[in-house]
Image 1 (cartoon, rainbow, N blue to C red):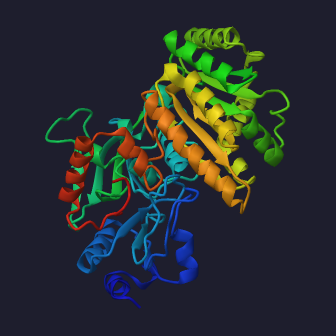
Image 2: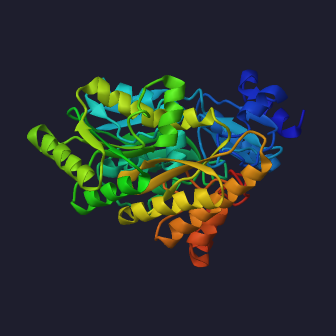
Image 3: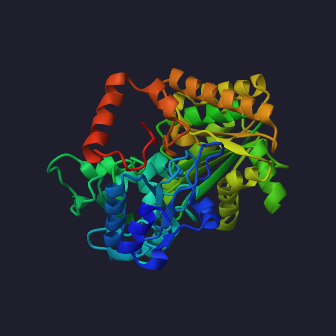
Length: 456
């Protein structure tokens, strides 16, 4: 038993601390293919903020790294353990402390699953908009740590736009509240906002206060079928240029559709090579008019077929194919997931470059995308155990990052930097910018115990 494990067991109930090697492996990494990881010394599953604080203080005393973890659905290696670290899994901190319809806010623990919070809010006539494709599994704490986006963020914004306040344990073992509960507030620096997207490098999140919206009217769903991703990209650029703001605009290519059909037998790939899925949520006739205008842009860009969904069941089936794309592709082999974001006008060019990169490096690249805001997810697939294919895929991965930066984009739109994108961050941002970020990290975590090695 290591000294830190003994220290943890001295301050926590015995069932909160796990050091069984067979269990540690299942908590040692997220879903980022090929991101490095090692076995931690222990996994701690706290039940409340006081236990989280006790963990950080024990680790601080022993100068042991603390690696926060939600559901482990991340795709950048941000939750990957280092040797001898302590993984803090908030999976059992799932309480909803408050839903306030008058103030339109909710106060929740970090382990609550996104869809569970959304369902609880819906029961009160309220809506929590951020909806990553992993919403049935990912936690609010993980969403905050990575500033997760989702399908509706093209119109309603990302997680940062809904976080009013957080409670965190900082690198000195202090339990602090940041942010506010009011609709407005500019007192002091926005330290709560700073925690959003920090991937556990600035504090261990123990509670989140989120802003809610009133429930929406039913959406209008449209679909356009295209011969290739470049034509679909032209439709996205045209919709943006026309000033339309859909509540979702998603792209799914042939490789994804075939993988989903092979798994779930939805029968979509027989009808389309690439699908654009759009949604409009303006009420009444305005929503219908927006849907019809999107269809016109689909047709003008060369859609082979376009139509409104006949009913909610058909609409849900189409979007189910989008949500199932990633796990369906994982059945084909290891998947290295990209997450670049470019200006919306550059979407056709970026899709063309991705296609050329796949051909140049002889790598199968599937494409799904939050196309309406330029957030593209090329998925690089390699056969199991094929090391040359893996090396080609990694070269393609870095070329895609370089192309995104070249087109005025960013190396990550919503998955985070973690381990996979650290080189990309250095390529994207200036030395002065990076120095400022390191200074913030040093101030809030002077002993460097909070998720070291991630982002910076």
